[in-house]
Every structure is written in C-alpha cells, then in structure tokens.
Length: 523
Image (cartoon, rainbow, N blue to C red):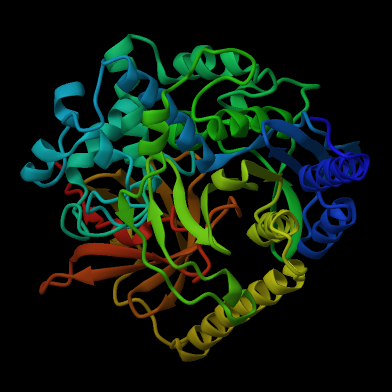
C-alpha cells in the first residue's frame, strides 16, 4: 500500500537530510587549508601533505607548503616524504601474508627461521618468536643498538643481526615495553629466508605494485634529479636548514620507506578494509591477520601528558604488530608515528568510523602533524573545536625551556678550571665496544678527535669539559653531541670510557649510553 503523500514527502526530506549529513561527515574540515597553513608557520615546517580516507573513499590527498626551503616548488599529493617507522606496518603486513600462506606463524621461533640468530641471553635466543620481534618486549633498552645503523654505517643487515648477541638486556624478556628498531629489521630478514626474495623486492611486488603505490620507494638512494620528493630539514644552531638525507638501507624494514599522501591513502584504505584491495576481491592479508595486528600484544605505560594536552590522555595503550593502539573520545585508535632525519609522519586509523588520516612533514616537528590530526578527528567526531596548534606549541615550548634550563644548570655546575689527569696523548688510541665495534681517538695538535670507525659522518672534536669528561662536538651538526668520560685503573691507565648525550632532547637512537668502550691493546 503506497504511503500517504505527507509521509512520502517526509521520507524524501529525511533521506535528503541523511544524505547531506553523510556528505558533511565524509568531507574534510572546511577550515583545513587555513589550519594547515597556520601549523606550517607556527612549527616552522616547509611542507606538509595530508590524506583523509572515509567510508572506503579518498576524500583528500593534498600537499601544502613547499618541498624544500628556499625553493618555491610546492608540495603536492604525490610528493614523497620519509615515513620512518610507519614502515613497520608494511613489514608486518608482508609477514601476515606469509602467515596466511602457511609459510610461517607468528609464534615460530626466530632461530628456526634465521639460523645463527643469537641474543645475549641463551634462553631468549631459544624462545624469541617472530611475534616477539614485532612487539618491543625483547628486554633490550630503548633504541639499543641504533648506532649500528643511524647515522648511516657500513654494516649490512646480516652483520647487524650478528651483533645482537652482544647487546646486554635492560630488563627481563617479555616483561616491559621498550621501543627498538633492530628487531624489526631482523623480522624483515625472515622474508628472504622464507621466500628467497629480499624484503625490498617483496614490498615492491606484493604491496606497492598491487596497491598502485607508484609514487613510493624504499630508499632515499632511489631518488633521481627531478623526482617529486621533499627535502629533509633540521634546526641547526637555532635555524631551520636543508640537510642531507641519511640512508637507512641497512635497517630498511624498520623505517626506510618514502611515500606520498596519494599512495598512503591507498594504504590506509587497505588497512581499514582488513587487507582486501578496494578494487577487487583479492587480499594482501586476511581479516584474521588484520585482527591479530590490531590486537594488543605489549602494554604501554601511560604517563600524564603536558597540561595543554591533558585531554589526550588515553584509558588504554598497547602495541600490536606494527601498530600502536589507544583510545580517544571512546573510540579505538590504530596508528603509528615515524621519524627519520629531517622528517616526521603520522598515520591514524579509526576503524569504527571507517576513517583514516595521514600527515607527512619535511621537518622534525611532531606538534605539526598531531595538531592537524586531532583537528581532523575532532571534526569527524563532531566535537567542540580545540586549538591543538596552540596546545602543542605550548607543550613544545615548555619542554624546550626545561631542556635549556638543564643545560644551563649543567654548564654552571661544571668545573671549568679542572684539567685532564693525563696528557692528551694518553687518551688517544683505538677503543672497542662489544656490539658497535671500534672507535678511534687521535691527538690533533692541542685537542683530541674521535671517529666512529663504521660511521663515516661521526667525526667529533673532543673539548675538555671537566675532570675526566670531554664533550664530543660532531662536525656533522645533525648528530647529537655527547659526553665521554674516562675511567682509570689503579695504575692510572685507562680502563674504559662511557658516553651519554648532552641534550635531554636527543633522539633515543643516539644510544651512546649503551656503549662500553675498552682500549684495544696494541699487539
């Protein structure tokens, strides 16, 4: 029986209203262009690209600002940025495809897949699984061993894996979270062990090619003149500058991918579609593996955020397989950040809203990508607006002020009138750390020069600080300065030296504190 005219009219009006509401929900924030422009200026970032996917569609893939400081060429949706640790989700997706094929399982012991794999503790060597490689619970310290790969070293992936056996644990196995990169690289090397194809070729063939990610690559060494890529930028001596890329080929499965907003939007759609390609029935991985990767594996500690960001404190925080998990405003969030020299990025998925957001930048300012992210999320969640740019700037300024005060206090307390207890020549020589290898200290006139022998850019002039402590001032100013302190034997000879970063803001990958440098005795 047909509806009365008044009800038919009401139904049409309701349908139109619902359609308008859905369109409004799918569209990006109306003020996004203005908001991103403000973030660029506030955080001094030359270029940003943003992608938004909603309900199975790409609703935005757009560039803002410029690719390179001093060059007017604009960043666009195809401009490639380093995505850093967002690479980790690609590695786990590749492994998930092998789990689906029955070629591996998440709980295979690593030594069975990588003969010769050895950790410091024999029990851990035997019990560590592929899952353990991916969940930051190995017992290694935060960023331990990153100096084997960053800044760029001469070590290969295989050589780095061999050196894991010399890295002393910071905690017991599977007892707590500590972010690492080396074990993700190790996980990536399971792919060639099982398939005969390198991690690089597998990602190109099974992910990039199938997804149509034609504006992405696996190394900064693949960039050619004229390619559409963003330069790296760092603040050096108080001024933002263009800096050289730092290749990450020897740790590629943990962080080497370069991609763009248009391609990362396709990646976000695949993830929200639980591994199924949007344009066909084939899958990269099954829905079962999607659930596994998005399930909490390691509990993350929850600290109180800075006061301006108090509203962002989650009720839960876990690490899955290549993804961080937390909540925001009652919704489960699946995401990751990425950082390489001169660029940081953010990927965030909100499964129940069928929403994904990607923000790529060409400077090391996390406040830029997070302020944009939460502005977008708040819009889609229909929340009252928050000035996240002001909030993140306030939090950053406070953190930088606290770090400056620590450095100022340290400078005021150090004993400038003290002198080394030995002639400079006595400090010179070859030193070795069990996992890094050799570093050399040479006397050059009236001062010492330190070189990390497997890291070509790590050449530092040692300036006496106080007593037996010197400060390594690296000639490549992208590298964080470090203190080096010498300890003596009873006869006055040098027993060992320890190092630590000077700045409290130093990236954790400068894991100087994990080195124990022992003099290599001449034969």
